[in-house]
Image (tube, one colour):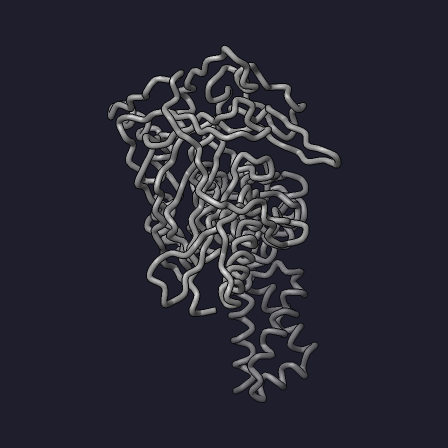
Length: 485
C-alpha cells in the first residue's frame, strides 16, 4: 500500500468543566452517574420564551485553550444558529459559532517518532452548546437532556495527519493540554471528550484530495486509531477494485471491530447558519486575552524542555513524565524533597508505574497512591546513601511501603535490611562461597569469565541480598585474580 497516502483531520469536542451550562444557570452534572433528565431546565428543553445568556467562565476557558494551542484570538466573535432536526436537539437548532469563532490559526507539535516532532495545524476552536444523549433500546430510543447545553469547545485541525498513529499522538497531546489547563477532565468514558475523524486516501499520482468520510463519536483514542486504520483499508480496497468512495457519516462498531455506515451524503450538509439574534457580539479585548494568558500553567512542551535542559533527562523520560499533569507534579515534588532527578525519573517510570499498573491505577491518579512524594524521595535517599542496595530497595522495601504506607527507614530498621558494607565480613563470605563452589572457580580460571555472575549471585544470596554490590564485586575479583597467580 506504499503508493497510497493517508489524509486525516480531526474534530475534537471537549466539554468545559464549568458549574453551569453554556447559556443558562442550570447545573452541569455527571452525564453518566446522574439520573436522566435531572438537570434539564427550560432552556435545555427548548421551551418557547426562554432566552440564552452567555457563560463567561466557559468563554474564558475556551480562550485559555485557544492560547495553549498557539491560536490567534480574534477581537470579535459571535454565536450563530446551526439548524438541524434531531431528537437530542429539542430547539431544532444548536447555538454554535460559524464565521466568527473564538480562536483561529493555531498549531500543536506532536511526536512523529524517532525523537522528531511534527506540526499539526489547528484551523479553529469555537464555542457551542452540547446536545442531549440518545440511548437506543429494543423498540425505540431514550433521550437524556442532562448534557444538553453543556459548554463545548470544538477544536478543528487541518488535514495534516498521515497515519492513525499521528492522529492518536495529536489526540493525546490535546487531551494532555486540556487537563493541564483544568478545563476538561479528559474522561472519555463519560463522553466529556469525543473525537470525529475525517479520513481520505490519495494515490501517489494524485494532485488533489479525494473524497473523505467522517467517523463520528469516537470515545477513546484506541478506538479512534482502530477505526481510522479500518477505514483506510476499506477505501484503498474500493479504489483498487475500480469503485469509488462515497461521502458518508460512519460509526465504529467496537464489538465487531468494524466500520458501519450511518448515512450517505448526497450533498453537503446545509445548516442554514445565521447570527444568533438573542445573543450579543462578544468583544475580546487584548487586555482580557493577556490576563488569561498570564493564568496559563506551564504546559507539557514547556515542562518537557525544562526536564531535558535543567534535569538532563532523556527525551523519552521527559515526555512520559509530562504527559499527565499529575505525574509531572509528583515528580517535581519528589525532586523538591531532595531526590536526584534522573534517579527519580527512572524509579518513577519503572518501579512505581509497575506497581500502579498491577493495581490498575491510572497515571492521572498518582496523587492518591499509598506512597507520597516525600516517602518516595526518602526511599531513593537510602539507596543513594548506600544504606540499602538497589535490589533491596526495589524488591523488599518499596512493596512494603505500597502495602502499608510506612516510611522506608522504619521498614529497613524493623526488618534488618541495612546494607552490609563491612569488608571483613564480606571477604569471609566470599571465601566461603568460593570454597563451596570449586567447580565454578575452575571454569572461571579456565577462561569462562561469565561464570563470575553466578558466583556473585551466590555471594549476594549468602548475604541475604544485603551486601554492598560494589564492595562484593571488588573483593570477588581480587580473590579470583589471586587464584590465577
